[in-house]
Length: 76
Image (cartoon, rainbow, N blue to C red):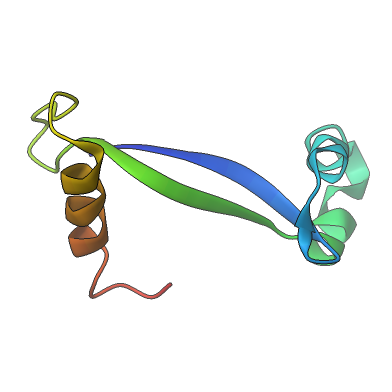
């Protein structure tokens, strides 16, 4: 599978790029920051299916439906 998404950090109900940058450059403080500001990978598109077939020519609505189906039985 080839997935498209974004790594985000939430702060008071909003995403914050500054907190994400802090995590990426934290060095020794990474574990503390990871607990304080957990990062999440938000998926929003499926570019190739589990068999490796590229599906970019398909409409986004179809790719999104296939992405959701791929994760139906997995935890959130």
